[in-house]
Image (cartoon, rainbow, N blue to C red; front, side):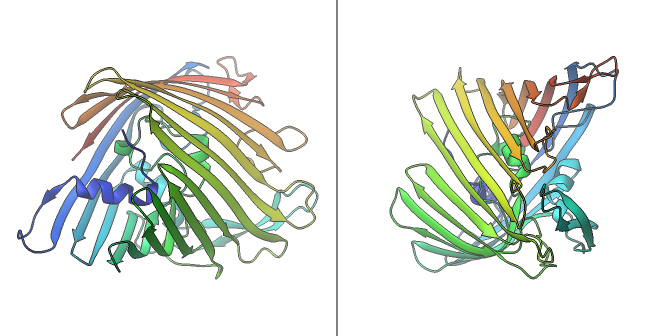
Length: 376
């Protein structure tokens, strides 16, 4: 299996679908996926308050819905578009920046960096089902110019469960960007070297820009290793908050015909004037996957994730620092276009973020998920 960046996840799904127009004209394609799952905790038991790993999407209890994803694409000789629509809980979580009532921090405690005041910003119209919506122009054989809303180029995992090995997602993916709206230029320097540069709205403000600041992004890819950078003011109106900077490295290698190793590491920090410790998070994850047959694979994600500066992603100590360890073992089994994914996950946090069956705080949570993902 080959590693690909998030920016092309929608395009990859489109490319695998069927043609619906004349042979010598632009090719209209339809693709997507449908997913649902069952999730239950081993420990703490489900007798206590409902709880799940502090990551995105696969966090419902009992039988739960994922999303229906429909991707429409039109690819011409020099130009085209992608319209990626999502319906259901996973889709709603993925496009949260297009929903009503986004609260943006506008003031921070100089001593701790913790938000002290928020401003509610209405950024929603009717695009709460739009995961991606962009048009592109193939300026040359090497250069492509894209404008619109597209999934992020940072990180190893993607929104579509059909393109991930593990069904649940990592901490780094969950708290990194999901999507960007803006303009980007991709350039293929050679068969093994690529580059991208772009200017975007603040992260996940996908429908329009309510704060009138912009973020720049860049990517350099060499032989399956991608260095990703993101820099810009994400709040606009917070006087004591400077820009957010994120650097991210994603890579993957086929060690043998059956054995694959993937790697993701990231660091994100926001400069707050007068803060003793700027809000930041960081992490590293390894992905080991082994194909036992054409239909059955076994793999694990091992991730360490840390926070600093009272940002509230995981529980923090009195110095504003916290961490989490995620070990996820998945065993996808393919039946035609359907993939069944049994998964066991263990989360251990530095603080007691969970509640056990006796109502007492505990550091650990173990859970089981059985997911079904149908891709078309």
